[in-house]
Image (cartoon, rainbow, N blue to C red; front, side, top):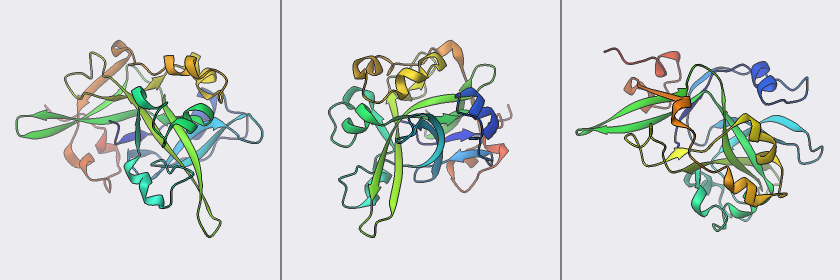
Length: 225
């Protein structure tokens, strides 16, 4: 699964990387320990204008038909293998795909009787676009909540010793295809595959990341040998 990640790239850099129109680069506070139910920075096609936009979505998808928004806390991830079948996700997969901006994500590897957190990031440097789905949910009082889930897939060679799932990472050349709503769902399914392991690195970090209240640079600092 994907349950924590970091985003420290600036809004201007995100706008350039995701080719968002000029003037849409929000001021972002670096986030070192983004947790479920919190707002995340996402790229999608604006439902009215059709152009790419940077926006904020609550992490934890609330289906439009849900009676209780609390369901979102249980729907932070969507399995690629069943995304076209699950009622919670199938409509969003066809019409409301997005990219969740992340510089890296955390995963916990069992070592003896404990779990060691690791930070997984791009080899070299650079931001990732994690495959996401988004939904709009309207409360009885008329207020609107926009939320999202991150798609997961089988692990690559790097991730396999760490965990049995990993987030789907979309290559930049495939951003347009992924964001295109409903036009080619079969082609979009083809993108739900493990990211090449040679384009990733992972290293142990402090257990400070276990607590979502800890949101500071030391969360991604390599653990001292």
